[in-house]
Image 1 (tube, rainbow, N blue to C red):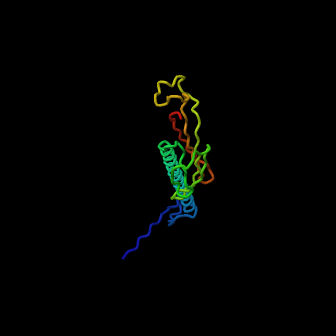
Image 2: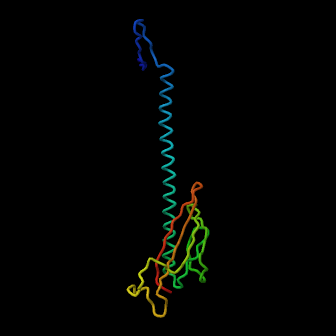
Image 3: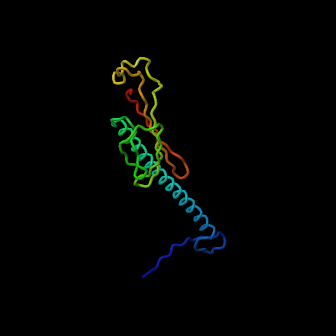
Length: 172
């Protein structure tokens, strides 16, 4: 059985001698190049993993804001829903709240979100004559619709992120 060795052969001019193997400088330069390449790929991978986590958190926040607005729109009293601090589950409000309503809740996946819901008269840009919007015009009410807004914020690695959704609704 033969064992093969990979070696580098150098011929020095004029002396006729042969040098086998790599020099210490060649090995050190190779190690530096490989180390830089590995560290840069590692940093890139870590940044991609962190970016993916923020994207998942943003998606959760958008879904939560949409759920709050949908629940609010379908509530018979037109009240923002009550949000549980554990699990962020929604339930019907027992009374009309004082706006803004702010709740901090933790999802089942462990994300902590601060949800702020508010309602105000829409100030514009709206057409001066809203009579063309028949769903907004009710007998005996002012001619201005309301804006329902849900803002959700959370912190990821010391940086605050937020999502803001609004809905234009009919007059009360």
